[in-house]
Amino acid sequence: MDTLLGTIRSQTIDLCTVDTISSFANIPYYFYYANDADKPEFMPTDLLRESFFATLLEFPILVGHLVMDSSGRAKVVVDRDNLNVPEFLESHSGVHFRDLQAAKFAWGALPDGVATVGSMTTAGAGGVIKFANVHVVRLRDNSGVVIFANIPHYVVDGVGYCAFINRWAEVCRWMLSGEPSGELPAYQGSFSRNILSKLLPGDCGELDDSTRELFTTSGLMSKWLAWISPKTRGTVLSTAAALTSIKGHVFYLSARRLATLHTLVQEYVSSNERITDNDILTALISMAVAQSEAECRPEAAVGGYLTSLASYLAPSLFAQDGDFTTEFVCDARPRLNGLSAARFTGNTVFVRCLVSQLKSLAGGIDGQSLAREAKRVRQSISGVDAQYIGQLFGTLNADPSCFMCPIAQTFTKTTVVISNQSRFTLYGADFGNGIPTWVSPIKTFYANFVSILPVHPSTGGFALYVTLSKQVMAKLLQNEFWMSALELLY
View (cartoon, rainbow, N blue to C red):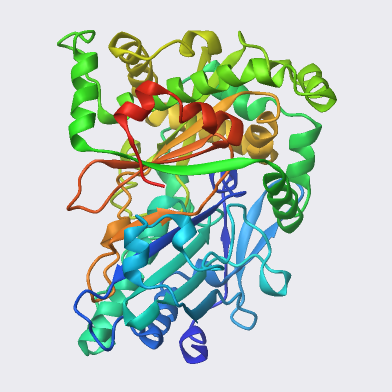
């Protein structure tokens, strides 16, 4: 390890405001690998470790230190004499792979301590924010391996995360083959933030009012969160998350049931209108969560003194006729010419807001209402082009501290964040013994977050990872339309 990392050169990598928008969050996944062939040397930890540190040579940003000033401007400083070495752990478990498989990979079947970090980016060993955390868990009787891997959103987005994991797997396969490492084709990606600024258009479009307000409506809370250090901010947000009663579930939507949803809305969609899988899923999630939120309002109204005070300070969280905001995550890569070809691994994701009256979404879900909302989603997403992105990035860069505005507003707005990660190449991570049987997020992320995930290529369909407050989740599990369309896995 020391020999490998000793070749890294010192450098400073300036981050941009887009990096800091999601900087509070980690990107953590479990990868489950089965030793179906009973190989005596199945995914040896020494090889996983050696290939991991070899891959860091191509991703030097992951061994740097985060430096951030009080205005919100951030950079990663790579000092070859003081590297921020990522965490790489190994442990052995008495759990057999077949036990995990029988439990459909439910979190409760995992041995304790597999996840070494939570949803929020916090300081780890030595009081430093690590840019990569890996825990290799060897299962009983050499039956398989679980790899927990996390990278903070400060330095990559989901595409960048997969780029690192899959390159690590590629390097591992090459080493396993016994071929000289020098013959491995060089990695072609880039982490230079200058790529973004070069590809932004000169003429910018107009932001929609909701998205502009999301990043320009600041207050004492957002200013304070942006002003404090990243380590303190991580502690504050992780503590707040721990105090929140959150419940997570993973649902499965089969290709057959998705086709049924398309059939339901088809009657209300004209022949010249295009409705995608994402449009239908986003609409369904928004409506189901909004309906569950609305059903909790009468209960919250009689929740005691603390709830009464909260309803006074943030009435929109308790009023049944208040606004409901859907923030769907968009990626600039397919919208900025040349960005995908550059294989950029930094953050290019942002949110687009769609605001509705809570009561308009809180009715029953049927083909007509689902089609109506899917059309609104399609119209909103269609408005995101290169000019729109240029205006958004310009707004963000004008005030680097604005990256905490969306987090602060969660205390006064009812929101669901939807991230479609179904194109992430999570199932491309073949370390030499096949792709993972299952890939899972951690048990809880943060309230009112939903991600649409890929499943094993042999299965088809999508997995939906939903984290809500326990009260709202209880209502979602009673939603007849939702439960008829999806299968609860765990």
